[in-house]
Length: 499
Image (cartoon, rainbow, N blue to C red; front, side):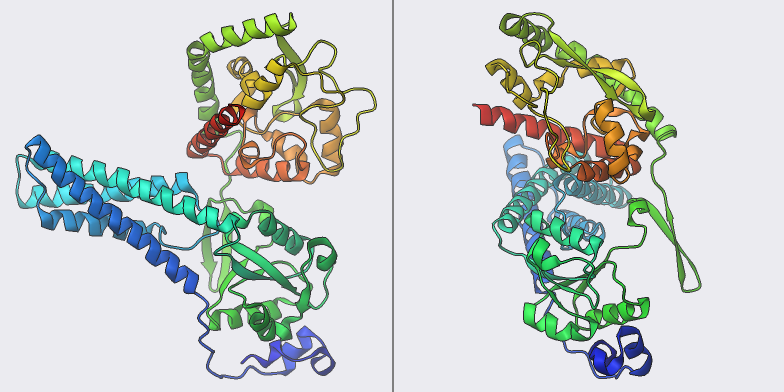
């Protein structure tokens, strides 16, 4: 084992000295069964996909009999299923991950099944031109697409529910008891659906009192690695930032890999690591090049053009709703029907954001003496609550936001983007919140990445800024579509709760 990681400070003189003076031994690593849940998850996914493909094949056969059309040959059905599973494996659909992105993985399932069907059709065309080839291909493809996607949705739902109930959580050890390490632990504790449960920190010189802030101990230093792994039955190690030399952290990562532990690393300059990046090597030296979306590039120009087209279409489609809601506001509260408020948008420009009124006149601005909660954004009811019953319904269902489609049509806002804030708060947050001003690189949105993750109302400003900047730098039309689908689901849930 690596004695450098075990040497106590009074003998080794600290991590750096220990690594320098105590050589590593070549003892065989202990084969701890640390990847059980990963294997179980992969087998579970494979079983669900296989079962759904079998059901799809049976549905295809019965459907063919009912429609009096030829049934696809069994050999091609089996080949189609095998190819679909192979492509899903290549796309990472059998790996155990923190996030279980239903929408992303349904798209991957659809692409895998479609590609498998295209290959089967191409091969069959080369071998023999069957007159019923189209019918024999479209039916299995359609059934497989629906069944496998439905199986994945059910599997992810059950797994997410189990995690939230405290089941299937993997104990995680966090290396580095500093600001980033503490933030990592807090995020995992706040979101058990990610599947990891932080149990302890490893750091010789902790910079944060993790026991007081998070209820998690600093269980030791690098030389205590294996005893801590045994004590807490750790299944994953997350390496964040610490005062330990890189050589010590590299030795620690290597030892964890020998013990068959999953290891994740928070990279330096993590704020500048978007999802789109490339890695090149100068010998053994990796060069990571980030490819964030350019707020002034073609991608965003296309987005804004689509925004205006969609806003105009939606205004036509929902005009009956706008008329009904406007009339209801007028009958409930009188004129004016719309509430206009100054907000800060792209490049710090101020515009008037439109909403349906939800309060009686004279109560739309914060009451005198209102104090913003520490670290929280403004929102909801500030001061005395003078919403009408109908106004409260409008806010809860987000129907009060519909007039902002006019702001989108005027080019002041986008359908998806960071939510705009009032000028008086923006100036305050830009001074106190890390990277808050960066979110103004793009147009504000009616809905956004932060909002669909629960950051609405009086929630953390720093978390909003982080989520908003993630959106700005990882923008894609697919991400916009995901946010719209998640917003639609949230609105439907709100209506259901009202009922």
